[in-house]
Image 1 (cartoon, helix red, strand yellow):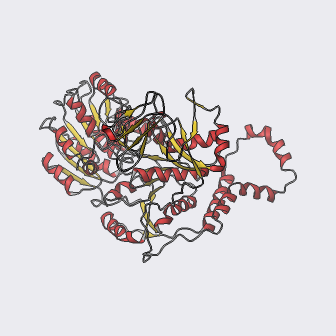
Image 2 (image 1 turned 60 degrees about the vertical axis):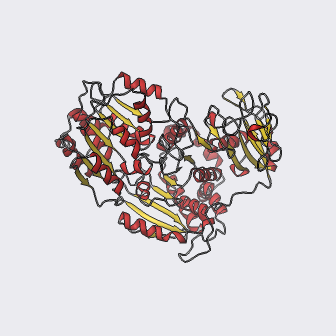
Image 3 (image 1 turned 45 degrees about the vertical axis):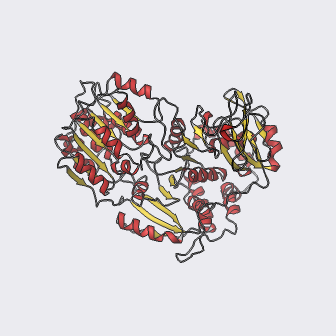
Length: 628
């Protein structure tokens, strides 16, 4: 029987590679676009939702049209984020594994530019790039695009949303005029239409479904809650879906980290993905999520672009996006490759209008859902546990040797007693937590709303002690990592930890007063990467002792201390303190350091991403600053 991909005109080598990946039939976008693109003589606009197989739709035809005997760049694929860049590169490498001499290079910020330059010099036919890093390489005159025959603009709408219009213009100006441009997008705003007009000549346009609509396999729900109950509502949704594997979207990096940190403290398997993480940290988070070692990925819009993870059951909009069109991209993280998914919005009564706008754009109706009661959650968790026990696969050969001891242990218990005890292992925790749980649902006409800031009821520092620790982001720690490290080594619960302030080579965190002494005792011999971990109390309002001190602003007297971790400056509108962490003195506000430069809040203004070229753009997974 002829393979369906062969019928589209794909060669046997590529078809066999596709079969090895487990794909048997082309998706609708692939079935419609591949024959058109294989002709190689048309510009093309393809509109299809995220998760419908667009990478193969343009990747497979490229492999048929490129001359792999030549080691010069013949195809350029531009995409908005490093995650998507890596995903596309990985897919095309897998498709081309049976093609001799095929070379694909990923070019993106946050990674070593010298390594990318070496790969380009060796020879490459297909370059997959984010716009910022591509411009850096073009500026070094390290690549020649005179032989480029095909340019693919993937997720074109998002590249424009992120301010890459000027970068795209600059990059395309270095490519031949007679190239063919293929544009793929989930939505078709006017800006994307202008790209098609400016760079294309009578393009073939293919639309799968209605423009800007959502994936038909996704159900859309919303819950109305008071702003102060939003975090509790998130937990209740997660608890009511024991097998949930979800991406939770927040509006800002700060909210993303904050929600993830609270979830980790409350015992959930979660982590954050946002623009302030180094590439190594991002890769670590994504690897855990792809391998399903993490249940909840808390992400900003830009950081989550290009996340192509199978079997995501839910997308939860903890905050609605500012750009209504972004909802389509968010919800597209679930319901991929023909599977079903659920997109949930947690809103307050004032946001009903936004839901109606989204409905008009995606052409689908939302279901107004009610948050489950505490009883509902406990019942769902109990029977989830019962089903797991009933369906667990028993390894007879391994467990046989332990059966006599197990039977002795249970000898005095009846069958009913054993069942009760197994069920209670997990069930008791939920019973305790949801005892007398309030109704979190809010009506659409409830106007007693407060602003979202502080909605999780951030804890006061009263009853907590602020501590210094000589570990930070340079040790590849996120706040979640540091929380786990302190809890595991200090032998304390995450609920005993208050605020965490992650810096470069050190950090600060709060612990309940009652646990301070035991924490010190447990950390006496703790090491990290063969160096002793040091924890100290901070003075009131300070980060520690020792270090440099300056008076009177930048023009005044300055004395720096050697090897301390704290610096203090006075003057201006009040007393402020900054902290350094390396041997050799204090850090000035705005001064240079190996990790970029930071303001007094500890948040990065700009980071270099650990390589010689291109700082990371704030809030994004891409590699250049957003242009307004």
